[in-house]
Image (tube, rainbow, N blue to C red; front, side):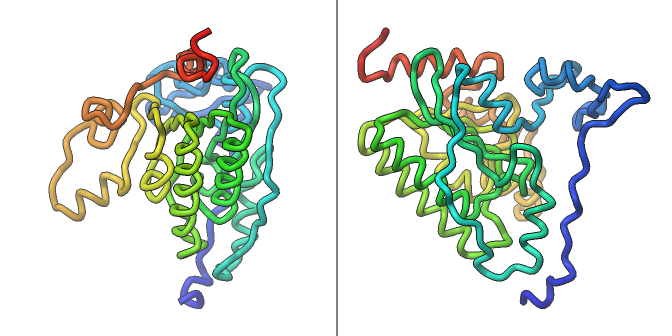
Length: 280
């Protein structure tokens, strides 16, 4: 089977930022196609000022707007390997690497207004934030460490699901991480899951759905299979807003929808309520 896919290639991602004639850089909004000044986009937390579309956000940027100054990035030194000898897997990985992004997950330890936490972010710009053996090992170690240190965990999830280049080994990570999460929760500790666009596939079918509190960003696509796959399967047109965070909040799957400017204060409130020392 692997011989049949040797010709498969993943195109090198191009920068989403476009340079103008001068020094100003612009990005095209994937939704409304407006050109946005890069500086303005960063100041607006990567939300389009014209149509309020939520663009992807790297872990480094999430850490900066959510955590107090002085946070530390954390790595548990998990190994990267090619469990099914997928053709040119290392080249695909290298092409996906960017500044500050070396795999599909970034982790930091820091504080939100005096409350110490672990914050993990799935990097959707790296192979669509897909769940592989590296991410599985990092998350497993994260929840075990947080359980020992008795610290809350927040995970921001944006993922296309399990990583096809690792075959069955990627699917095994679903159970592995879910087990670590449950052991963490059994210890009476707080796990907040925040869903960003898109939150799908094996990630959504496992640890993304295990949060004690589930938060979502506006209009995020959330589900196991995408709407197009479902429509092709049932041969029916799905209603508007199907699998979007607003509909899932209406059905009770999501506790609250929070804009990026609301998230830090919301996390602080939740951490304060669940602090073992009581409300401060």
